[in-house]
Structures are given as structure tokens and as C-alpha cells.
Length: 117
Image (cartoon, rainbow, N blue to C red):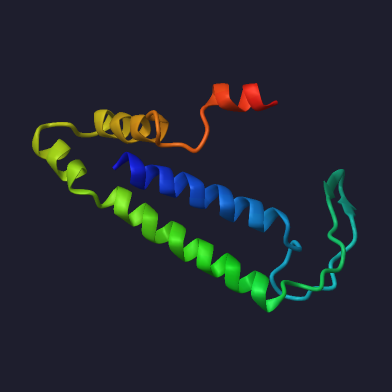
């Protein structure tokens, strides 16, 4: 299950990095100007050409892979066993959170990031 959680973390990171490099809108859009109304500000957006077909296909592929990997972790029989043995409510949430932070479940540990910086 740790390997499956690691796959989720890696796919999420790849999807996030891919999305950060894309224009703000998937479809071509003319954007809108900054607006101030009664003291409230709403930031504008510049015009965007939208995503190229290969960019959209890669995003869709990564998103589908992330969804499938997440289903593997969330639907793992271990969680049913936990509930059968009385691990429910906040304790089950804590167990799921512990999996996300378990050694080997994330591509890099915090110390790895600090050392790389």
C-alpha cells in the first residue's frame, strides 16, 4: 500500500508541474481586465491561446492515472479490515493520514528537500 501511495504522490506532483506550465485556461479565452467595485478588487486575466491538443491529452492522461492510483489506495482491503477491527472515525482518518506520511510513501522527505536546497 505504501508503493501505491507513493505512486499517487508522484502522479500528483507530475500533474501539478504539468498544469503549472500550461496557460490558465484550457480553452482559448480573451481574458478580462482588473476590476475594482466598492473597494473590492478582482484581478484580471490576460488573453490565452488555450492548451495545445498534446498538452490537453497529457493532462487528461495524468489526471486519469492519478484518479486510478487514488482508487487503489482508497479501496484497498486494508481499510475494510481496519473498520472490522474497530478502527473508525478519527482513528481511521489518522491511519489514512499516517499512510500519506509513511517512509517511502512520498517521493522526497522534508530532509531531502532541505539538503537539495
